[in-house]
Image (tube, rainbow over all chains, first blue to last red; front, top):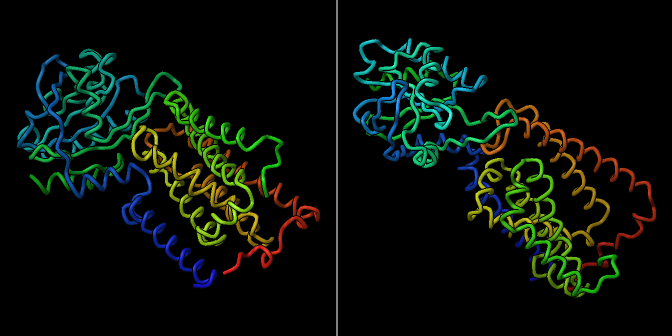
Length: 204
Length: 205
């Protein structure tokens, strides 16, 4: 084979292999960021969540798995947060307001989980809940009862928390829907309240 | 093109290996990967540069041989283009910081699939070929910079939004600086004359 022919063949092989790698690395050219990949992966294959003990704004202890059989809307917050968590709080408020009242508690509950359990004691969780009008019953503000269970919980949800320059945190904020089977089935944008509520009501 | 240094090959090899190991140390990795700026604009270019220097420290015959094995300059440039594109995916950057398989792939592919083939191909490229590489690099850096500044979302879950904007501006500045340098060299006839004629450089079939 001449050098030119061999060069052409190698180039084509490299291009084919390279395209395949890019295809594989972006889930068929659909997910270029890890956030998109996380959402698509959950939609395609709902994820089981680890058994996690939680403590709510009134100091009551329970387990994430106690909600099995119900739908569960989950957001991750920290109470010192002023920017994104403010949107999170008000997003949850809107979801809470739009859900059929009779379904709350019976078919669906809302959890705002703090990823800063050292700082966010029940008093601070209560204050956060009061700010957004959480009822403390069907919408509870909670923290992991044991901080050591936090990394596994965040990893299962695919939530990455990084400290920012102002002593706070940045995280990939979103609204998460856990199905009746206890699996994380959907992750939506904060501003996608209406589609999120539609998804929930379709399963009531 | 060989290294314009008076170091012996042995010294160059040791320096290369030492630099590579230094970059691969967990402490160095954690330090450079803590910010998107140093991850993308220091660690990754250094890995590419190590691969390129490794190629250039081979003697002319070895370079020629390796280039022929890899299928010539066009195939080499294609390898570089695909491998560098892969590492432009924000998702790849996110995945490459946990010290796992993706991180290892980054440490292997950036020197061997970006720097090395580019350096091997470079001496065989004419003015047009080099211009192609430069214009691609300039437009890619500029586009990526604009994307990072204009994106309404954080593209990497592991990096701060501020960091992303800073990288965006630095990419645009780098793009402009590279354009200025490259444009400047076009006016230096001595540089242009150094390029070997492509026909002369092609190895026998």
